[in-house]
Amino acid sequence: MSDIKNAIKNGNTALGIEFGSTNIKAVLVGEAGEVLATGSFGWENSLIDGIWTYSQEEILNGMKTCYSNLRKDVEAKYCITPDTYGAIGISAMMHGYIALDQDGNLLSPFQTWRNSNTEQAADALTELFDFNVPLRWTIAHLYQCMLDKEEHLKKVDFVTTLDSYVHYLLTGEKVTGVGDASGIFPIDSDTVDYDQKMIDSFDELVAKEGYSWRVRDVLPKVLAAGQSAGTLTEAGAKLLDETGTLKAGILMAPSEGDAGTGMVATNSVAPRTGNVSAGTSMFAMLVCEKPLSKVYREIDMVTTPTGYPVAMSHANNGTSDLNAWVKLFGEFASLAGFPMDPGRLFGLLYENSLKGDKDCGGLLSYGYYSGEGITHLNEGRPLFARQPDSNFNLANFMRSHLYTSLGAVKLGLDILLKEEHMAVDRIMGHGGLFKTKGVAQSYLAAAVHAPVSVLETAGEGGPWGMALLALYLVKKEEGETLEDFLEKKIFSEMASETLAPDPADIEGFETFTKRYKDCIPVEKAAIETLKA
Image 1: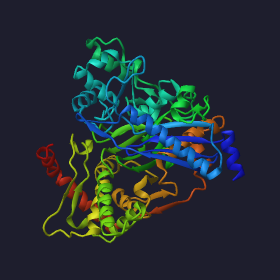
Image 2 (image 1 turned 180 degrees about the vertical axis):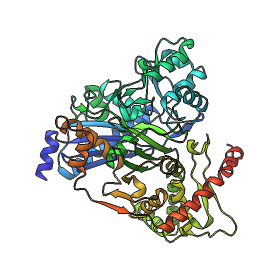
Image 3 (image 1 turned 30 degrees about the vertical axis):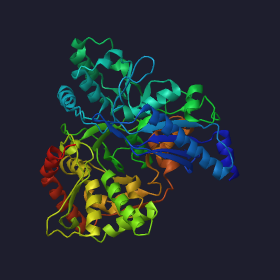
């Protein structure tokens, strides 16, 4: 305890703060990456005028409250108030669109990754670049604004993502990490920067529009893990800590997207490693040894925080609908006079799903709160369906929702593993879905036909990964790569559990997947007929 207090007092720590879709979470780590304290703040995006967004007030208040809860956790555990850290890193859900004028004012509502109103732009850029540009990427949003003749573009000075925006508020630096940047604009892994040929192609495409800026001028500068991304300013310290205790001058790591922090949190940053991050959105990432044979609209090409190319199967929809059903069962438990802790409720329902039929008894669900690029739908409608003779029971019901939370991402993984035959030495699972031991892990193993490992820190997820990137900034030795730092200093003695797939589970998941693919027209019909 004395050592921990001294580490906190002397700033021998690192702090990661991640803005997730439903939770802002802060994780404080010690010199070996061990978690010392946490804080969080729950929030939800809003659908306003057809745009999924969070207001600037929500962003700032959420950050302050999250940090305040972290500070209180430190005070409660160690009887000390932190006033400095070795380094701080900000991460957030990737993609989306934030446009600022030269004074730093928002020019339009923040558009999150969830928006799919950019199909025209994404299709045009994919053809121009011969490189898949998903609907949620920042450049797709920017070009769609151009196609729509948005007036605010005349005043644009900075176009960026949520983590980069928060980093800018705290430091005044217009930068981002390469992993996050790879969801803004295509990256050249050799230069660890935006692909210059594609930059030139874009500028040529929009030259006739007469804007006073070129695209590189308004995008954040790209940095790799381990590079300094500025320091916390006096104004930034006041934004973060409402008590005024926090000191300025703290080193800041390059901000990152949640894909990059997920890779770090699972030690999946080297070629032939992969991970599946399970949350409100769901994504699987495999670090490439070689380029894919062709362009797939279902597969995003992004990078690790050091610039290695990564093939990503990204599903906009993950556990939102699953969580909604669990909440409904919680309401019933309370109504019946048996209110239940959420963790116990999730555990009971997840574990009971193991008793279900391997193919979910003919049940089918789509947890589509928003559009889903992998299945080529621009809107979503949460949907549950069954045949009159389906085996409708609680175990199959929950199993179908757990399967479908992995459904879209599995379609992308099938491309990488079955068509591209990518070599993967290990696949790691992380995120809240894996907190209930052995359930989602076994279903993921069935989905990928391969063993899946889950670390003891699986529930900490991205915020811990961001804290490790901040720790790497201040603790790396001369010439030490991120891959070596994680392998030798963080994960070498960390406990994990590995599950091999059950052949019967594989067969059942494949049957469910065929049903899932064949019935996409049902989801499409729901989108067309269920209108507000």
